[in-house]
Image (cartoon, rainbow, N blue to C red; front, side, top):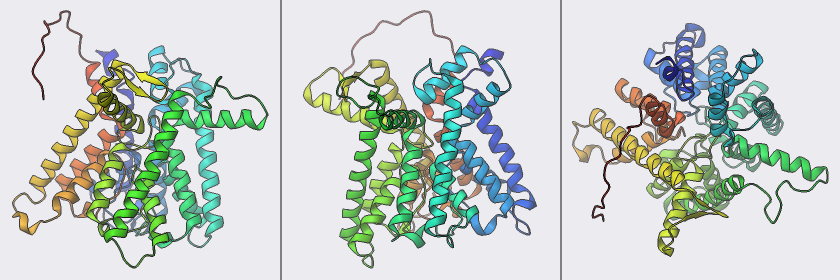
Length: 454
């Protein structure tokens, strides 16, 4: 029983829960918001949103919290962005503890998809690489707008952007910079880098280092990168461009008429990137057209890439589903993704993930609809369902965007969102694996038969 309780699948759950608990207590202290009152539920909500790098807020971060409170939020964001498991493994290594093979394999599959990787070298690359990117981002923001991004604010926003958290010290997020291509460019680059995944960043760094030294690329033949990296880069690029184009069309057709088309192009591109788990916004989300909101729902559900700071179902899941659809049209029995076909076990995980995500999102929407206005006639709550669905998907995919209903939720609603952020950050597949680790495989098999479907 002890082995099951402390299996690799349960350790990150315990550490995330512990981080949330400590963060809740610290944010509830008067030092975090002198002279102001923050309920335990709101403290729990903020701590969970920070460590789950979501960005949903019930109070304004910049004006409500003191520098101490903002520092706690920043620390929680950094811990959540890199992943509690990464920090735990690093601490175990520094303390000279022996990390078991199962722990090495769990970390490997989660971050590098390779159970034979060097834990020591990788962890130092992750930590140093993350701090380096965040430092460069902070310097860039400060140099572009020293008044808007003082040194402390630049560091906060750079960490929040790379970790895909979406917390901002400005009450309207990044609206004041909605026409600034340079500032938007820094944020978009930080968000994309944080959402690619540590394995991809590691490979890109190695590739760049080899090319700068005049050495041949690491992969023979016509391929520049590994299969995983190629799929992630191509899918990410497609989602950014396609999402931005569709949102731009939707906003040109019926959005804010005060913005010229070139400014709408920038805001649409930024929205396409940020709604795949970053949570910043340069336009009021509630002011977008319903078509844009529906498109954003899809992008939020897809999210970032495996092993990254981002949440969602992941870009590889989306690419696998698209490959499956194409293979069905072609009558193929294999699901091709790029230069390889996916094995049956991978496709089974894809469908399991999607089914569980649909159940979690659907059940949460139903609960919020019941307890956040279920006794009110529909004609008095027109648009409430879309707002609720948007909030639920944003929490589950750890995005942090909202149409403006977060602070209006009851304690029950906020608690529901807290659970969604927790499950979404860990991933339903990880939680399912943790529960399955307590079960025993039956020593028998039932007879199989076909059932009419469709």
